[in-house]
Amino acid sequence: SNSAGLMQYDPDGEHAKKVEEALNIPVLRHRAKKPAGEMEDLERHFGCEAHKLIMVGDRYFTDVVYGNMNGMLSIRAAPFTSEGETTVVQTVRMVEDGVVNRWVGKGYTPPSQPLILAYPHPAPQCFIKSPGTW
Image 1 (cartoon, rainbow, N blue to C red):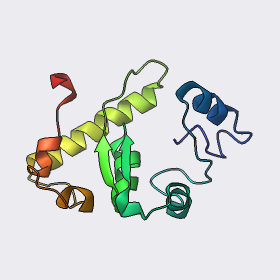
Image 2: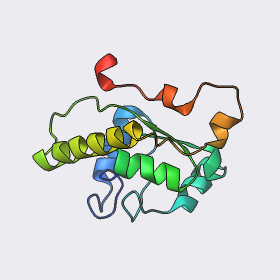
Image 3: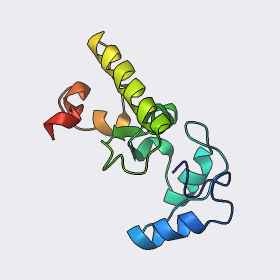
Image 4: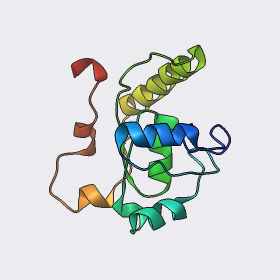
């Protein structure tokens, strides 16, 4: 998360504790926002190399970029809700969607991912769905 567990926004870890209790999963504390960050902490926590991990997030330019930069299979999930999001975050999401749609329209494809390439599968573009179709 770029909020829960991030020292800049959650220095005492209170937000992280609430998320852990609500979801019953650990929140890793970290010093840097995505797409920067300490991959070594994730590898140590999960006990494997980054290319064996899956990054799931709702932001292209933070979550997906971070995962791709570190060799993970990256999955961009649609946000559950925009409730509580600032106008800036909503605007950034629209810009991200526009840029990615433009790239896809020009024929750009996601990077090769070892986790997908290890199994027979359709083209990576088959994994990209419009939120409007869900």
